[in-house]
View 1 (cartoon, rainbow, N blue to C red):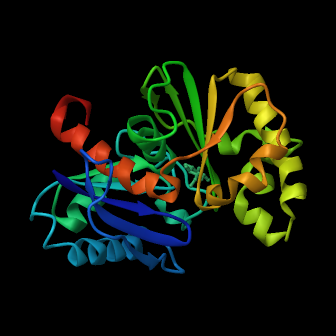
View 2: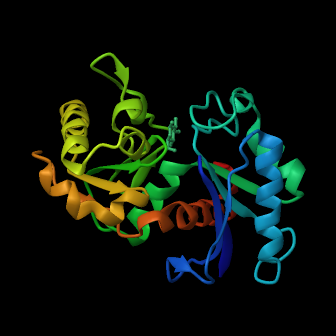
Length: 255
Ligand code: BGC
């Protein structure tokens, strides 16, 4: 069965029909840049464009999975770091369902990526405590214990040396400050050893676009916890969104 997954990020909005058995895209993905004014209305218009593009593969009225780079607490976005500030306080699930005229499962982007890595990727079969982090515009995080996701962990916003961690160690900061991998790894070391001290995880999984270059920075880190790149790379958000939508159809009580 195919379900459309759409991943809303700080720089791009990406979608693809996902083959859930395969745990991968059924068609190549479509990416549209995030509107420079990334308000809910402007983002919803792009999401509608992505849906329209795949209308032959995804039946009318079927549920889609959608991620956003913010916590989603019972459908509401309490705060937002990297999209237009007007998202804060929005009943976002209802907003998208009204705009798109179909059921929508809205989920935090890193939680979606974590789910996908548990079902089909680097965390598959791990029955301990896994912390997935995504390094991108911000730092996203997902905590998964024995295969069950603890939603809305915001470990990108822990305070490190007086700063919000993602403003020091996200990969967008590496770009912005033109840091070498070696320089960036010093910040990552500080970040991951702090998270390691707080949680004692069994495994770190590192996703986000930069995870394709993981051999340039993961070996520079010195941690007790094994740290591995995400297997699904930046496909994890879309695949996880589709998995979450499927789950919501199967277990309506959990919506
Ligand atoms: C947001 C998280 C999100 C992460 C990655 C952070 O700024 O607060 O909810 O998962 O960025 O997009």
